[in-house]
Figure 1 (cartoon, rainbow, N blue to C red):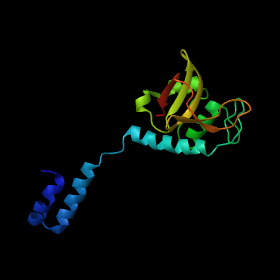
Figure 2 (cartoon, rainbow, N blue to C red; figure 1 turned 90 degrees about the vertical axis):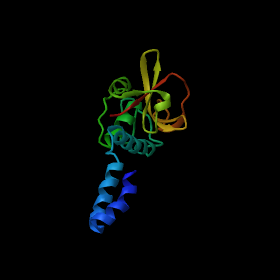
Figure 3 (cartoon, rainbow, N blue to C red; figure 1 turned 180 degrees about the vertical axis):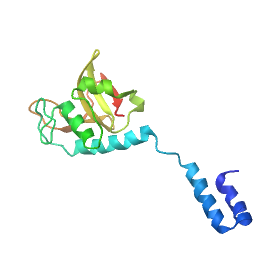
Figure 4 (cartoon, rainbow, N blue to C red; figure 1 turned 30 degrees about the vertical axis):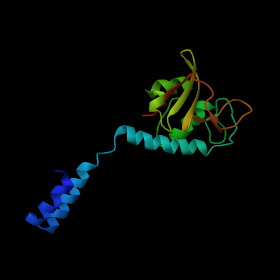
Length: 157
């Protein structure tokens, strides 16, 4: 018998006020506490919105915002705005994240572009195989389709 099915029986035996207390207690046991992954997902979703809000900001090597960015500068800035700390470079950011399979990725996770074992670029996964990133000199922050299979994914903790 579920907790909610037992409530009417409790009400007849212990009175309405106590039954309301029992309902609250039963309901609270059915909703688990927010896990660390759920908290990270919330921050990641907010960081994704921060990055999207920088659409059109010009690329500048070494820049960390708020008006110009390089790739890791955009991810660092976006996560810093939501209270998460990341290292400065794409490779260091990869080493700091919880690594994921492509099937486990969700919007807000980081996308690391690599050649062999070397990470050379990072962006924020937007869903539907797209990434927000600061591409290269002469370009600006934009949403683009992921153009290669040479990517790894990481979740900011």
